[in-house]
Image (cartoon, rainbow, N blue to C red; front, side, top):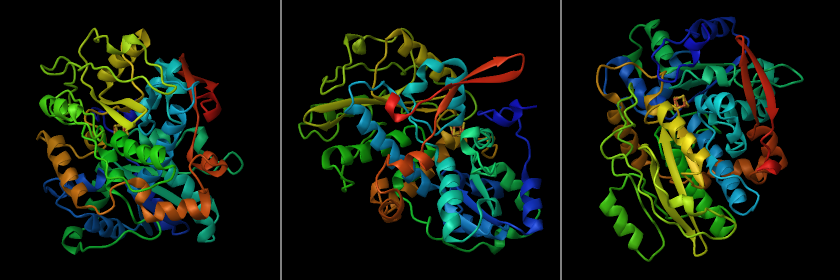
Length: 466
Ligand code: SF4
């Protein structure tokens, strides 16, 4: 049934779509373009019975080449693109008195589904940025297609993801060209489905060498890689927002933000006068790395630490900001001093039950923040429903491997990615330009479920309504 496709926790098995890929491959009529998601490259080694991260990114690229994909791009590049647009949107909201807060991230389709179905009043709060998958599809079909002189219908766009919900996201009408009926993304395959494709080829593992992603979408920053893990999207966006806010352009920032600091350390940071980090965390680093069960709630140390933030500029957070939440919700949060005049509160939550509890508290006015990252799977995509199954508590091991790899990456912020800079210089000009709104942003709709027929009611979430 339908639900088997979209279960974010992976409790149910997704529909196997590998046959669709094999058919296109055998027909040999289309250019098959694929992008590899950040956390998929970490878990791919598990398909061969190895520890997370043992297969290098270069080996993953070679694996995809051996499986028959023609062009292999880095989805982390499109995560960088998402960050730049999203950070710009945050800055816009912070400078517009009519803005709705908190602003929520938009890259998790299960989260978007939840809001559209159960909490439509929050639709104006969601970032209008498309997810990295959908930015990839749009850029490939609308821009890259011209470079390679192909019609969009002659390109078959695939993503390799940790997520079953991405299969549904690509079917949204917003991501289908209304004139041609061509979808931006044709297929998304989970890491488990890649496992099935591997099984068709003998000895593929022994053949693996180091290969690079194809140009031009081959370069990414460590910010893009952090999309895999709860808190990473927001951390990355804030670094870029900080740069935009203070410099007006994308200038390099040395700023570091640590959402996983323990309480004592956070207090120290809070006292520091340099204005770099005003940290405050819940001390357990989200404490929810099980990957199977949602343990966010009722965890010993999961109280939100409340603290007052200066109310500055147009951001009016009233006194209820400091009221304790009625129930414990595991949330990572911190305040960030953007500059002398502006300090904002940011947070990250993951796991379905946690999210719903938090939304109820926000509705009651018990919790206020400027920017909240939301991921449906506990711990974020690294524990996604399309990841390989494991007997172990695998999510913390994947996360460790991710951060180890992230440390080695040379470009630290999305806006410092030279290919991102070129893309803006040559195509989009600036974030939120007319063209970037057309190709990189979207809108959301209230969904009414009645007698198994999905009815939708448009609630446009365009920048003018923010
Ligand atoms: Fe998919 Fe990631 Fe959302 Fe899970 S958290 S549903 S893997 S996008």
